[in-house]
Image 1 (spheres, rainbow, N blue to C red):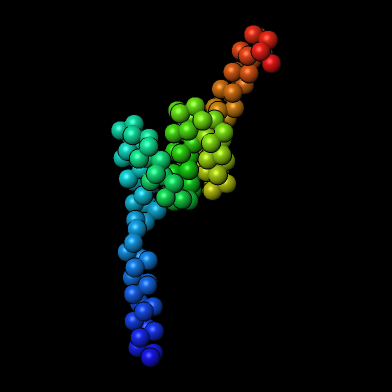
Image 2 (cartoon, rainbow, N blue to C red):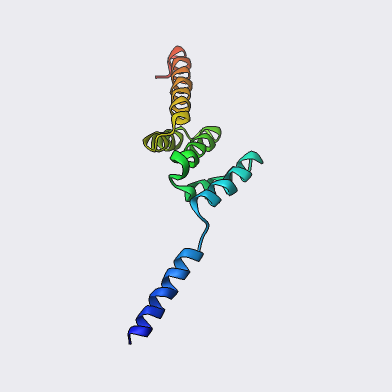
Length: 113
């Protein structure tokens, strides 16, 4: 009975540890796709990279959403990266806010809001 339990637990452990890439491997794969401008695949791997190296993958997700003009998602991922200690994300978030402020000024000049 004890032997069966130990074998089962060992099997579960091996399955979990071998079932996926590490955060680092996911980040590196995401970066490979990002540099090729394949943002769909990069996004998939950056999401799996989690908080690897102070949230660098989260910062790259913000960049992807900025390129896609999905500003709310860009803001979300920059803030998550900042929470992990990523200082580049601070600069990127400031750029996003500056960009949005410029859009607001243009819209206000056209009396659209």
